[in-house]
Image 1 (cartoon, rainbow, N blue to C red):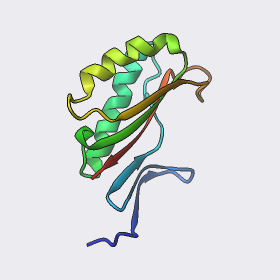
Image 2: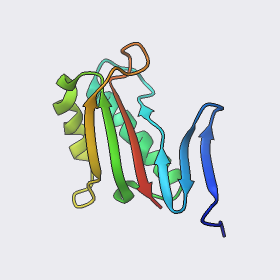
Image 3: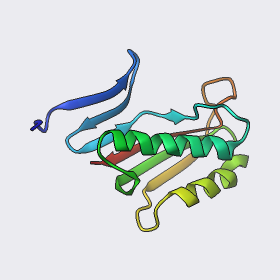
Image 4: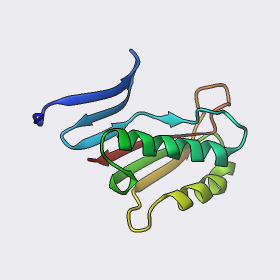
Length: 120
């Protein structure tokens, strides 16, 4: 059994850990699409699939999400991103969420980035 003070880090690369678990909480780094298509819907679906995979890796799932922060390269993509989000999020288990426009790393290739917090 792990103590409440233990910290588990997953997919660390020397700069960051993709997922950190502490005291029953799951903290995710910013997730961007693996395939940098010019289609925000495709990038959003990719990001959400990665969030699902990260949560499964630590024994959680999207019904346990507490908060998701979303950064869009351009707020003109808000509705397209929301269509994918709405199809993915579980009714009755919607997390707290904020969406802002931001210049994202990757010279314009990243159209959406999400960072999530969940419970185990």
